[in-house]
Length: 414
Image (cartoon, rainbow, N blue to C red; front, top):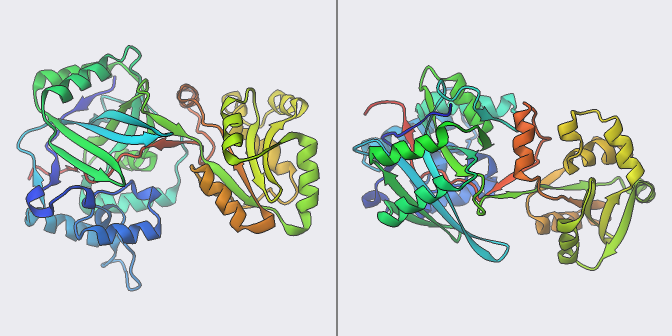
């Protein structure tokens, strides 16, 4: 049974920082070096200095980004930049954004997820790697706090919890508001024990899926001697503003193999020209069956469908479990790319933005190609995770990301 609890959060003091937007940041793992510098410049108190500090040439074991995060954390608390809430609360977070030209609002809950009470109820769909886990462990050990929430998704089939959350936001003013890159964020503190009980009760009988934060979750679980819970943001599966984007691939074919690549691609797939990226994406969103992709290279845009015999051969004898075999991302990397000359072993460049993928392929010149994918339905992600399986690397991009800096969960009682 999932167990969620309120906590006495640390929050930025508006009297010290002014507006909240300049101190917020995306999750650490989607921050590029250029963006890291921009966030540093946005405010001397931007949360990036805690979650993803810059590395310096003279860093060593005693002076590094983890020790700087620890020092900033202690200093900001001592100076009143961060202040402790007087009483425990769960927090409602609304993110208003524009998706495909239309406004949307996603409403979720930030609370503590108890490890013991939630054992076996938290599904994971991504493999984790030792490097990121070591990095997050060093930071957790230095700061002794959850600086960013793990992002989970819970089913709400009758949308009763969503209605409950909307009622709360309609009855009380937000605790804080912020604008971040054009999106609006609003935060409410729920301190009423009855309301907290209703929220926790709605989630108690469900299995939740980790959308983002697998490394942070596993590190927190391994360090549960420091804290028996982890700060978690819970979105609701039936919320139409919960967007799952695909992650597209950009490759470079070896110049001497371009013609052979194209011949083999045409042998394995049907290629139908499309006049524009927009036309291609419309086709892709409606394409039925397995193994359909948008494709761009120097020859233009193509709608790509793996030939039925190739799909059937793969699905009859896949090298992965059946729950993964029919996914487009699996078919691309297991059944198609290995049979294109020069593609096997070539590094991919990834982006959830199809326009960025096409532009990157153009920058590669005649050797570049972009593979555009369809999103994996959320129900299918739950099904894969429910079987204890991990999706292929870079399969899903949950949007919008949950911002860091709204609330913090310190492990001490101060």
